[in-house]
Image (cartoon, rainbow, N blue to C red):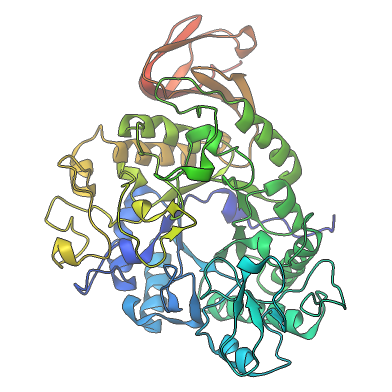
Length: 531
């Protein structure tokens, strides 16, 4: 592996909060969230203890896929405000000690992007992947109605033509299978640097990289795609050494050694995350598997699959970067979904915020917003039978008619509000010191105050059943019981003598020899001095 600068030190201490901009806060009453709305709510994030915000795309778009179909990477979509509003947001966040990360969508654009319009009308322009004849598999190719004819390859929807980064196995007999150093792929790699430079120069601290593994086609081992991101990392280390790339790759053992600073555990690369808290969607479909997740309310799951994947990833990323662990995101279900309740969300946050990973909190999860099944498709939110809109509903700020998200009437909002009479809100949660919100705040503060609980120290699992018990940094014991029924752990002799020192407890009692956790309970202890 090449010798590179270590990841910026600030990343190890990051608590990241994802904002889906159209659903977070609406400042102008049109029913759609916007950048001034986000700025107006930064004090909530600062109070919570969040120090890094990742904002899903707010760039100009035709909004056929929720903004992931970009028409101009350098301009803010008018629905969200102006370019000056973006700069004001970055500055207001900086004043509160919060870094801002944006969403980089490198694999495709909208078919209305000027790059594609030019390419569609200009034979020989290979910024996209073109074929004069229909190439298999047919479902990935769309006929072009522009001047050059033929077909273009897509990612996801037909309105998302795939940018050309070449093929790992080029073939002169199939001219669309260009090498990675052909003019089109070379131009696109430079465009990525130009886009990042534009926003870095405006104070942005990094990017979450959409579908980072998908750029070079026919690359089963991802060697060519890894080389591309290695090239980007080498450029960053020289030009912007304090900026970061957090990839949506889902395979940290591959992506972090390749060059990104951190990568997610995600469900589309194995079942590590699914086996933890089963972030499928309401439609389930192809995401279903036979095993119960560990955070199953009845306690039928196990930690084996997650821990095996974690061990493999941790060994590969050590000294190079980090593994990010999300509560949810805009593409899959929230912590509170189906049989899982807000009571279980507390232990989930206790695990996420004390495990040696980068915690990524999806907006609204801190108050226990739930996944809403059965909502109408909105801006391409149903992809391949996956009902994603249930995780994209408006943030619930208060108990007013539109939940404080907007001054618009409920029927005019971007997506419907949770109709449940007991839906949580930030205002109600702030007033209740036992609420999930206060629990999350306390856990974030505890993580910040105790280096042993952060991303840079080791972990040793002491018990992988119910409750889950693990030792952080050799000094702190974490106990998590997400199921409904109580669970008991017998303390091991190697933890020394004397009582465990409680730092944060919720439903857990530590005796001389045993630790008993009530249902939906968790605790963090310090070992006695001298242990």
